[in-house]
Image 1 (cartoon, rainbow, N blue to C red):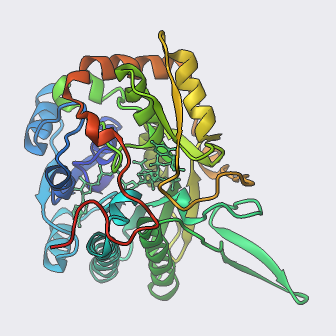
Image 2: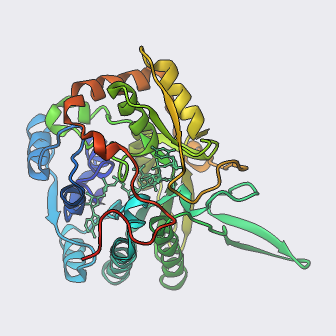
Length: 388
Ligand code: NAD
Ligand code: USQ
């Protein structure tokens, strides 16, 4: 298949592009390098050094003989988005290209507006481009488990059968997200469902849980193929942060009681899930949702797993929670559709955590300690990065 990977320079987009290429698909990658720019803004860098996108693509071509077209541009620029689709003529578009950090979206008004404009307008341009250029293109879009929040009932895969006053209907599952970032994904989901309904587009919304891990078989072939690994309190995700904190001898920063439960997934399963979604497309007019997580764990359980695996002393700190979120709650998620398509999950294992300790030890000297402490507070409307 011809697959266009948007956000192909990011943490997940790059390993996914490699994996799809390895599977024999003709891949192109697109990015505006916004993610590298946030690092400049926040004064941090990926723990693992990363090459430019051009060097990455050349390295892959030299190692495997497989080429990848590169498109540099911004999805909020409709001309760019249309031109790219017209030129590459993809059969599937995998869309990772959004601002993805909840804390970043909660810094202040400017960052909230940026996040929602970037994500919602970028996706809307893409939906129009697909509708006008080739409505047969299958859109595989990264959503998030956080769209659902933490309801008192089971979380279904996107849709809910409702009985109300003796009548029944099938409705989009009610959403109660916890940040302006997570809200942007809800808005995207609604826009996608609408365009499937009115124009007959085909789309898969991958409501993914928190990703952990740093390597896939393809990124491990050469250091120049490494993907980024974020540890800071704005972009670092929880398990990755705990691993690095343990290696540095810092306390693990559990927010609040740590009873908050989240769906999680290994990065090796992320790339496989996207492959499965591309190779088994939605029907024309179908908006389908897969809950892309392999297990649920509380933040406290994640911290205790890291503590148990680490060959040394680890302290777990319970910080005042900078976020507004429920810390003790019901959480039961249906996530069978990717398993039905053939996913064999890598569940959280001691071996994986130990391998992450090795990555963190190798690059520990690159960590800026002050970037580890959370500074963005959900209750404050103007954060540590002031508006200009
Ligand atoms: P990332 O920030 O590393 O990658 C996103 C990439 O998209 C970046 O390279 C960025 O420069 C690019 N981008 C952003 N806006 C763009 C625009 N307007 N035009 C062109 N390129 C743009 O993030 P990631 O961790 O790889 O996440 C990828 C996707 O997966 C996101 O949509 C995110 O919401 C979703 N997701 C991530 C996780 C996770 O734990 N990392 C979990 C669930 C869902
Ligand atoms: N947390 C801590 N300590 C930390 C960091 C986080 O206790 O040092 C807690 C948070 O309070 C939260 C949980 O861990 O309860 C997850 O936080 P996170 O920063 O790992 O993940 P989140 O903000 O939800 O966002 C990440 C990705 C995002 C993706 C989402 C999937 O950055 O792109 O959409 O995971 S999900 O959580 O399922 O919505």
